[in-house]
Length: 247
Image (cartoon, rainbow, N blue to C red):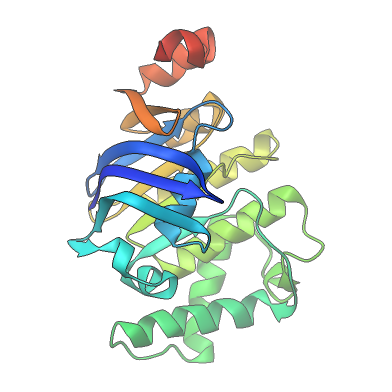
């Protein structure tokens, strides 16, 4: 589904990714762990097409397409979802309005009929229920006045509604308490655990992985993957730290 080969990227002239290679197959959940400054968020932003991140070498294929040739909205329409470590607030725009417009824009790009208001609300209620988010929250401006946990749950509702093929989640567990972490983790499993979907989950901590249970764990250090393994690798990192494991 996703194939990254020898990817190099820089930000403001500083090299961040240094020959990163990774393959993510359909039906798989891959966790990316690593120390601060290793390039984890840069990888997420490069995949999402964020401006300011310059690719200097390497290739990225998504569902057989050259992802780097696609604009951010084209990547989204193709089935990519990017979850942010710090979801932004959008005053004056309700979640319902934002999500319906986003979903229908993607459906139009794929040649599908747009959802009516009633059809959209039915989907929104279903996905909000999975994440235990009150529908009244979706009537409020996007993330305005939300707690950290509410922002992350609202973002998972967005993911459920948009129904992507690949979710790239950048530290989704950041700022979550134990209960919110379990709800978000179970939401990821419910929405994205399917034979035709995949997840690239960026995290610092084992606790989210206890819920999501990835198929593969990778250590990212100095801009490249330095070690890969199964779920046991995350436990080893928790016990020994990055420096010992990635040496």
